[in-house]
Image (cartoon, rainbow, N blue to C red):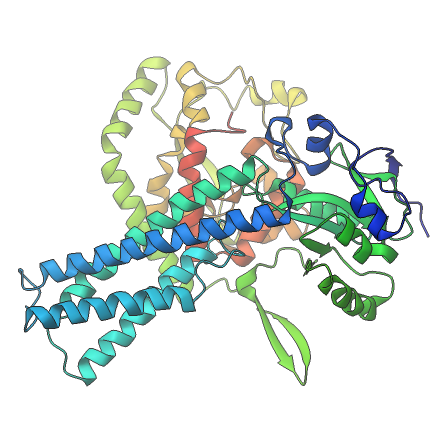
Length: 527
């Protein structure tokens, strides 16, 4: 067996002696500094709270969900009441009687709230994580209104049009806004290290390291990593992850006892373990005793949830992975959304575009716009438009700056590029120079969301698998822009683009667009 790359680790809250369990539960854990705690849990030093314990965390989450339940009820009631008031005004027919209207409103409210419960829109596993929470709210709302519309036709119920034309859109907007506010509250608490699920990661060192890295890089924290369990390792060592030391709590032979002693909420299995499937099955049984859930981390890179389907066959759970689709109805819908958003943005931003054009013209000699050849879908070349942010002879001066390149991989980037103009510096910082690319979207060369549009010289340096970035249209924004842009390593930038190419969705695009607005005002890696 290869030597495990760990470093000495002699103190910490989990450095318990080999004593009987009862004695260990009454023992006092050694004190540790906030700096040490922050280092071990991959949280910033000023964001490390006192250990809340599982009960305190569960109580806070329960209160959070109950508050969300109350505010959802207020939003739904308000939307239905608005529909009742507007009934009989303008385009909506009047309900036959006031009592009938109140009865219909009460029924719609009750069924709507029941649907939100049935679809588990407040499940703690989806709150504050990804787009699934919003999808569940939308699905519950649309399906219940669909069923009510069918019932209205079957039972000849008249006067309920206002609930569809007013209550439905108003309620969807209100519920989505309410979830966003509560998500901000939850994310703010978790960013401070509060109310995180306390987790142990187990598996081979490299797989454990990858899982810990991915958890640490998430914009919305979910787990607080207590430590790791490695095959053949001994307590008292540590595993180095991105310059930080994560304590090794035990070997994989003692996972259940370690989870019990550390009061872990979850044990994350990062990959195959010695003993195979039988070991994992028995581990699940042992974890039931300490009420810790077992989480299996899928090692299939670049595969997202919508492409994964579980289909049990005679008691055997089979995971099916759908083949990525690069054409069809979904892509046609994406094109419609691209054109609609781009045209609306060009219209709304036209005064700003005019002001920026004047600033660029007055700032330095040369044209307002800069046209550069880029590589698009299937390797086709197109001219990408930008506001000129460099001097006119920037391309001619590139060769002299090659030795100072700070970019990753085949990219050329220079933080203090002498070719950038005065207005170009702040336009690049806030991505204002990229606004003319909206016209590229209208023309069909680009999409609102997609991989980064590469240069010819970059494509010529691609490895074989990297060419998969060209399977769909490049985007004005994408995962690369909201995750650090030029600060990303080349491998990470490629991984994000390939992930998007194979797993994109309309809902995911909307989420990326929303996060792009935030990234513009809080720029990172833009130069």
